[in-house]
Image 1 (cartoon, rainbow, N blue to C red):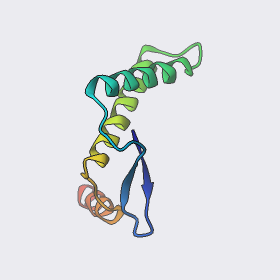
Image 2: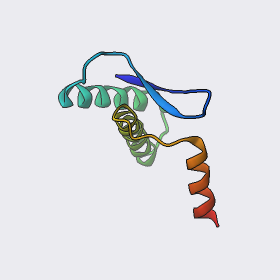
Image 3: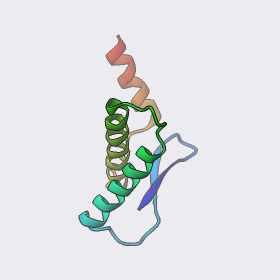
Length: 88
Protein backbone atom coordinates (compact mmCIF):
# COMPACT_ATOMS: atom_id res chain seq x y z
CA UNK A 1 0.00 0.00 0.00
CA UNK A 2 1.29 3.44 -0.79
CA UNK A 3 0.92 6.80 0.84
CA UNK A 4 0.38 10.33 -0.42
CA UNK A 5 3.07 12.98 -0.35
CA UNK A 6 3.57 16.44 -1.82
CA UNK A 7 6.42 17.46 -4.05
CA UNK A 8 7.90 20.96 -4.28
CA UNK A 9 5.67 21.62 -7.30
CA UNK A 10 2.52 21.04 -5.17
CA UNK A 11 1.79 17.89 -7.16
CA UNK A 12 0.31 14.96 -5.27
CA UNK A 13 2.01 11.61 -5.86
CA UNK A 14 2.31 8.26 -4.20
CA UNK A 15 5.22 6.34 -2.86
CA UNK A 16 4.57 2.65 -3.31
CA UNK A 17 5.74 0.76 -0.25
CA UNK A 18 5.50 -2.54 -2.13
CA UNK A 19 6.79 -3.37 -5.59
CA UNK A 20 3.59 -5.19 -6.52
CA UNK A 21 -0.12 -4.48 -6.54
CA UNK A 22 -2.14 -5.92 -3.71
CA UNK A 23 -5.10 -8.15 -4.49
CA UNK A 24 -8.66 -6.89 -4.16
CA UNK A 25 -9.18 -9.30 -1.24
CA UNK A 26 -6.18 -7.91 0.63
CA UNK A 27 -7.29 -4.36 -0.15
CA UNK A 28 -10.82 -5.00 1.13
CA UNK A 29 -9.51 -6.67 4.31
CA UNK A 30 -7.24 -3.69 4.97
CA UNK A 31 -10.14 -1.31 4.34
CA UNK A 32 -12.37 -3.28 6.72
CA UNK A 33 -9.75 -3.43 9.47
CA UNK A 34 -9.06 0.29 9.16
CA UNK A 35 -12.78 1.14 9.31
CA UNK A 36 -13.26 -1.07 12.39
CA UNK A 37 -10.31 0.52 14.19
CA UNK A 38 -11.59 3.99 13.31
CA UNK A 39 -15.06 3.13 14.67
CA UNK A 40 -13.55 1.75 17.90
CA UNK A 41 -12.00 5.17 18.52
CA UNK A 42 -15.37 6.95 18.50
CA UNK A 43 -16.67 8.11 21.87
CA UNK A 44 -19.17 5.96 23.80
CA UNK A 45 -22.16 8.20 23.02
CA UNK A 46 -21.63 8.23 19.27
CA UNK A 47 -24.57 8.00 16.88
CA UNK A 48 -25.25 5.69 13.96
CA UNK A 49 -24.55 8.71 11.75
CA UNK A 50 -21.09 9.05 13.34
CA UNK A 51 -20.36 5.41 12.55
CA UNK A 52 -21.61 5.70 8.97
CA UNK A 53 -19.53 8.86 8.48
CA UNK A 54 -16.38 7.02 9.63
CA UNK A 55 -17.03 4.10 7.29
CA UNK A 56 -17.59 6.47 4.35
CA UNK A 57 -14.52 8.55 5.22
CA UNK A 58 -12.22 5.53 5.39
CA UNK A 59 -13.62 4.18 2.09
CA UNK A 60 -13.07 7.54 0.38
CA UNK A 61 -9.49 7.76 1.63
CA UNK A 62 -8.74 4.27 0.34
CA UNK A 63 -10.33 5.07 -3.04
CA UNK A 64 -8.18 8.20 -3.22
CA UNK A 65 -5.06 6.17 -2.50
CA UNK A 66 -5.99 3.70 -5.25
CA UNK A 67 -6.53 6.60 -7.68
CA UNK A 68 -3.19 8.12 -6.76
CA UNK A 69 -1.35 4.84 -7.22
CA UNK A 70 -3.03 4.46 -10.62
CA UNK A 71 -1.69 7.88 -11.64
CA UNK A 72 -5.03 9.71 -11.53
CA UNK A 73 -3.69 12.93 -9.99
CA UNK A 74 -4.20 16.67 -10.30
CA UNK A 75 -2.13 19.58 -9.01
CA UNK A 76 -3.14 21.89 -6.17
CA UNK A 77 -3.52 24.66 -8.73
CA UNK A 78 -5.98 22.55 -10.74
CA UNK A 79 -8.02 21.87 -7.60
CA UNK A 80 -8.14 25.57 -6.74
CA UNK A 81 -9.26 26.42 -10.29
CA UNK A 82 -12.08 23.89 -10.01
CA UNK A 83 -13.17 25.30 -6.66
CA UNK A 84 -13.20 28.82 -8.14
CA UNK A 85 -15.36 27.59 -11.04
CA UNK A 86 -17.81 25.87 -8.68
CA UNK A 87 -18.01 28.90 -6.39
CA UNK A 88 -18.28 31.41 -9.24
